[in-house]
Amino acid sequence: MKVAIANDHGAVSYKNEIKKMLEEEGYEVIDCGTNTEASVDYPDYAKACAEKVLSKEADRGIVLCGTGIGISIAANKIKGIRCGLCTDTTMARLTREHNDANLLALGQRTMGIEVCKDIVHVFLKTEFSQGERHKIRIQKISELEN
Ligand code: RB5
Image 1: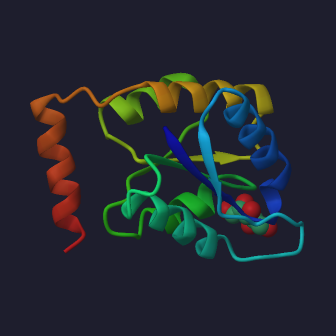
Image 2 (image 1 turned 180 degrees about the horizontal axis):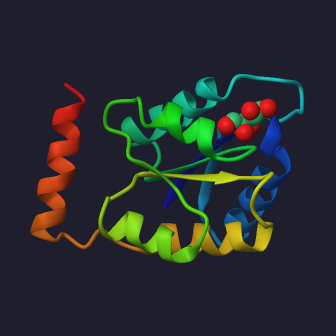
């Protein structure tokens, strides 16, 4: 599985830890930056990660900022992106099973790294349920984009 990952200056350290973990586990990681703590604008990095997923260069995306809030709001403005900001593994499971989320958002200032790593594992390993009621709701989300 290929995973695109992107972050602002507030989450460089967690991005590096998650990237290292995934590479050691055999995932191919596309690092969309940023890789320094110089101030950047998180919408630019949400867009970079989203483009990798929408073009199918990556199967899933992970975006990080200080809280995960700004970068998830930005990602969810992009047509075709369903980004779930998850703070526990239950949210990670359900955003895959029910929302078929293609991006995961995490916050370096608000979450522990071990929790983030567990969330990443659940997010990447859980498949969409294919439930008809969930498909209808996801279709209605798509209609909101037009
Ligand atoms: C950057 O200072 C900070 O605003 C950002 O990382 C994030 O927390 C926004 O939601």
